[in-house]
Amino acid sequence: MLDPYNSIAFNERGVIYQNLNQLQQALTDLNQAIALNPGNADALVNRANTFLRLNQPQQAIIDLDQAIVLDPYDGITYNSRGDVYRSLKNYVKAEKEYKKAIQLNMYVAYYNLGLNYFLMGKPYHSIYAYLQGFLTDKDVLLVMKTLSIEDIISGRF
Image (cartoon, rainbow, N blue to C red):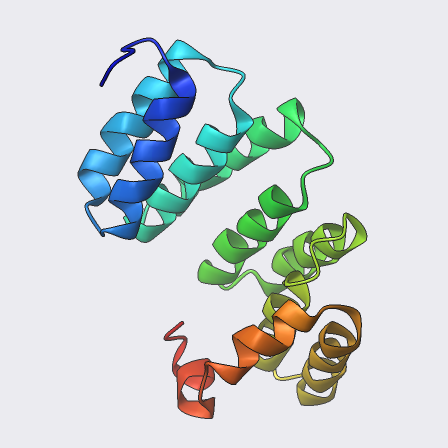
């Protein structure tokens, strides 16, 4: 690395490691990004997503709570916190987070809200959330086109 004090570079490399499923290396880089700049909300969100993939949801919530303090208007963070609550089967809290993400123009959260409603046993709410997503943002439709019903039911996505 050319600049060992560049928080953004460590964050970006951490995301690359995360995408390569090298989660421990991702965590190392994201920890360094946060150590260099504790105000790096993006690095906190990325580390939270790594913690979730490492099955450490409580650590993820801590990071997401801090990221929201730093940037309370980032829909990605609320969407991620919804994912954590959904993984904990706390569907009521997940619903609240997804709705907040949508209010902040994170329209792909409609997909997550729809899945959350499906898991809550509310199929009509689920369909409505998906339809709202389709009407609001073409990216939601692109996500849905890549999934089969088996993927959605099993949570493989």
